[in-house]
Length: 99
Image 1: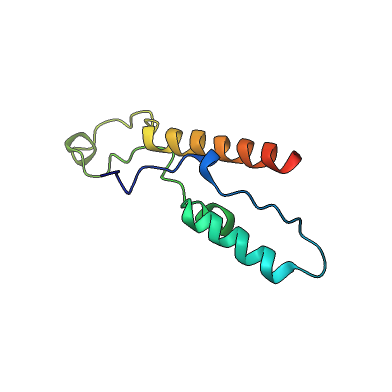
Image 2: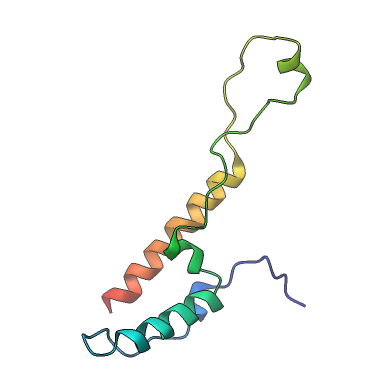
């Protein structure tokens, strides 16, 4: 069975064939919202998909508790992955919209 936490491929979104007009907003909105929720991308549109912290926290480590000299902040690999995926989604979205 597929991992439910794995991101869905952006190309698998169902196409929204009807362009938004003054008279079809409700139907267009329902179609786009359904497609985004189905692909687990709706949080990006609603800005509820918060990125992880850019740097790893050393708050609980033994060296910070002992009062050692401050170390350089370490980049968070999860943040870098999140930014990469976010930018990839934006690029795909704008390419699809330009067609």
